[in-house]
Structures are given as structure tokens and as C-alpha cells.
Amino acid sequence: MTGLLLLASALAFGAAAVWRLPLRFYVFEYVAMSVVVGLVGWTWLAFLLALVLPVVSAIVLTTVAAAAGAVALVWPRRPRAEGFARLASRGDRILWGAVTAVTVVGLGRLFWTHSLISENDGIYSAGSSWADYGVHAAIASNVAESDSLTMDLPIASGERLTYPFLIDLLSGLLMRSGLSLHLSFFLPGILLALAICQLVLGFSLRLFEHLGAAVTTLVLFLCTGSAMGLSEAWSDWRESDRGLIEFLGDLPRDYTTLSDSGAEVTNLVAHALLPQRTILFGLGVALVVFRLLQASRIGGASPVSTRLLLIAGVAIGLLPMAHPHSFLVCLGVLVVLTGEAALARRGLPRPQLAAFALALVLALPQLAWQQLANDHGTGGRFHWAWVKPEGQLVGEFWWRNFGLMGLLFLVIPLVLLRRREIGLLLWCVPFLAVLAVSQVYAFQPFEYDNLKLLYYVYFMGALFAGYLAMLAYRASRWTLLAAVPLAAVVAAPGALSITYEFGLSDRFASPEDEAVAAWVRESTEPDDVFLTTDRPNNPISALGGRPIVTGYIGWLYNFSIPYTERLEAMRAALAGRVDDPLVRKFAPDYLAVQAQESAEWTVDTDALDALAKAGRVAYSNPGWTVYRLS
Image (tube, rainbow, N blue to C red; front, side, top):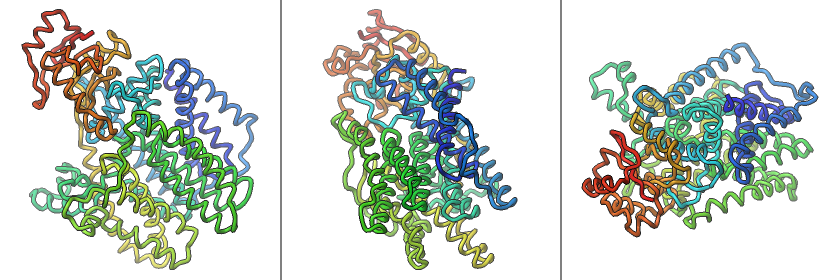
């Protein structure tokens, strides 16, 4: 119940804050923006308080402050001067209702089944979420189990938490307030995902005033995927000797993850919104920022426009600890609009510069922490052509990944220039710049992670695909005969990926994993360090909330954390050398060993039996044995 009160206070604060914005909203746009502003604003306040107060005190004060702030913002209650916009026709309202219902049902089911749901035989997730939720659950569980916010990385003891963890902080505080791990992931996830869908519709409507264009944008954006996926699916179907419906009902693989073929544009829903929880905050805030900047731009030089710009600057400045890729994109959009204002005024655009300065003042401490706290940086470096395989031609790589959408990226500015739609062209420029930068610079050790930027380029492409479809339809309804098949070709790989995701279910934790995690929570201290083998779904960290020496090395590599000594320390411990200097360097309190470790680890059972005979077994079940080391 306390966790639900926490959420209610956050949503109430968001609704009150957005109510005071001098904008004319569609009702669905208002609700969506309230969700994003409420959850992000509540989490930021809780984060700042938890840095100086115990976690429980931070939760209580944040909840009270959010509720009080909501009352103060709307009292005395009076109608919004701007009112609310309405969809133009009954047909538009039916179309909006149908699209909304599909996203609620579809995303609702995916988030429910993927968000570490507890079943009789264990805890389940699916697909990419199965792997990624290990680090998210470790951070959230560590927050929930700790009395204070340590800012340590629980999957690599001794390292600082520079990962953009705010959404996991929210889930951890929800867990501390009484919600289950499943609900603490599901509720923020589905609320933000649905809000993102509505904000996409709203932003397109603001630019083009056509719901058909907005729906086209949403469909193409959600169905992002490698262009090559359609031909791969066609080949698999032809070789399967099955009917089309039967084949689609039981797809053999994901048709956007085609690394062997050099195609890496994975689907937004299956590989970003579901597993990469940080993008839920990032994309949600970015869409709010785009709306604020769009309104301030058309408002001209006025106090209202200045107010909206400053609010946008604050929102941008709060992004690095939530999703740094979204921070870069939003800052780029603000820079372009600042340049436009400077040219229009033939002088300094003071409101835009003030917003830019405000964003930097808020962001720089976060960026400094992320770059300097661990002395490792983030692994950024120049790297040509994103993830192009060696020996593959750039043109071939581009076509396999981007296909028709890639051509659209290049055609859109030409069409807008020809139509002299300079105002719309300005919305293309920052996203095309993001596309260019992502092809020459990798922001993390895994070049693949530039996809977090490329999703924004796909958003731009989907946005203007809807616009071009609207223009074509207005010129002649017969153009639908060409536009619909083209849109289907572009969306097919992503749609197949989402369809495939519905059929996945992977066990994240066994009953034995749950049992050892329960013992860890009940019988050890929150700062006790465990030495375990690296696996994404490690129950000691993900469910027990305890720091471990060696998390999954794929994460450590991508966080630029040296892991060789950590692996060697684990090998020494599995050989029974628990007093080895390398082991002692990491000061572990416990060694946790699975009954069936993976083949890459050599377990000296005789040496571990000697530890058991020495009375150092702290806990055991059929799947795990935990040895006391201190």
C-alpha cells in the first residue's frame, strides 16, 4: 500500500505541475506528460534527499513534498486558461481509441510477462530483458536493502555507481515501500511506455495536425528494425514448409537481431523499451522537451515562450543521470533552435542561451561524476561506420540496416527544402547530426550502444514519413496503394520482432535461486560482499541486493571497468585459495558456489569440501552453497 501511495503522490505532482504549464493540450497528451513529469520529478527529489538522509526518510519526505506540492500548484482550483484541444472528428477519436487500446493491451502483456514475474517454479522474464534485468534488479534490490544510498555499483564491489540508474532507484524505493520486485518494475515501465506512445502521437499532431500522420509515426517508430529482417523472414518461411499463419504464430527467431548478416538495428520495443529501462525516462523526458521547445518556438519572443524554454532547459539538465544519450539529443535540438533564433533576431537569443546555460549547469556535475568517479571514463572513441563488419561495403551495410528508412533519412531534407518548409527542416537537422556522429564515434565500448542515439533518428524518420504520407494522401487518395505497402515493408521486421517477443518466456531464477536470495536478505548485512561467478541472472545481487565482486563481464566491459583481476580472484576461490592476496584485495565476506557452475569455471570440490569441514558453510540448498570468508 505504501508503494502505491508513493506512485500516487508522484502522479499527482506531475498532474499538478503540467496543469500549470501555459500549453493547450489534448487530454491524452496532458495525462502522458503528467506521468513522465511526475515519475521523473519525484525520483530526482528522492535521489537528492537520499544522498543526505536515510532511504526511508527520503521516501517519506519525498512523498509528503510531492503531495504538498501538488496541492500548492492547483490550489485554489481554477479552470485552465488554455483549455484542452479536441480531436477534430468522430473518426479521429475512434482511430485514437483503437490505437491506444492496441498499445495498452500489447505493451501491457509484454511488460507484465517480462518484468520478473513470479511463478510456481521460479521467476521469469524473456528475451533481451532476461539478460539486462540482472543489472537493473541488482541496483534496485541494493537500494531496497540498504539503509542509505551508497552510490556504489553492486555488480562490481568497490566501483562507484556511474550508470544512469534513476529509474532503478525508483523501483528500489517502490520495493522498500512494500511492492514486489515484479510490480516495482512493471508499474513504472508500463506507465512510461504508454505515456511515450501518447506523447509521440501528440508531438506529431502539433507539427502536422493530422491524426493519420501521427498514427503512421507511432507504428513506424515502435516497429523499428533491421531492413534485412524481411528478406530473412521470407527465406525462413519458404524453407519451413508451413503455412504463413502457422509460421507467424511460431516464429523461429527475432528478425531484427541479425549480427551474422551485419544487421544490428534491433526493435525499439523488444530491445529498448522492455530491457533497457533507462530509455523509458530518457525518451519520455525528451518528448516532453520537444513539446516545450516546439511551443516556445511558435510563441515567438514572449514571456510565455521564455518560461517554456527555461523549463525545457531544466528538463534537459536533469537527463544525464537518467539517460545520457537522450541528454545529447535534446541538447542538440536546443542548439539548433538557438541558432535559428540568433539568425532571426540578428543578435543574441537570450532566452535560448539562458535555457542552454541552465541545462549545462545542472548537467555538468552529473557528467563529471559519470566520467571521473571511477577513473575509467565511459570508453568513448572514434569508430567508423557504427558496427559495420570488416570487409563489408558501407553502402551494403547501410542498406542491410536502414533500407528504405535510410533512404528516407536523406530524402526528407530535400523534400522540405523544395517545399520551403524551413520550420520543419529545423526539426530534421539535429537528428541528422546525431546520425552522422553515431557513424564516426562510439560513446561506449560496445559500438552497438549507439543504437540508443539511432532510435531518435528513427523517430525523426517515422515523424516525417507520416508527414509525407499525409501530403500524398491529400494530393490523391490513390497514393495509399503505394504508401501502405511501403510502410508495411519498413515496419515488417520490427513487427515480426514484437510478435516473436510475445512467444518468449525464460526462467530468470529457480526456486533454489530464490531461496539463497531470501537467506542472503535475512542473514547478511547490506554491505556484505559476495564472490560469485559472472552470470546475468545472479540471485545474490539481482534478488538478494548484495554487492558482488564479479558481475557479468559484458556489463563490466561496457562500463569500462577492469575485470581481469576479479575473474582471477574467483578462480582462486573456486580452487580453495580463499586467502589468496588477489581474493583478499576485494575483501569478500562470502563465497557463493552453484551446484552446477558453467564449463568455463573449474571448481576444486575437494578444496571446497575442506572449507566445509572447517565449518565455513554458512548456507546450502540443492543449488547453492555459501561459504563464510570473514
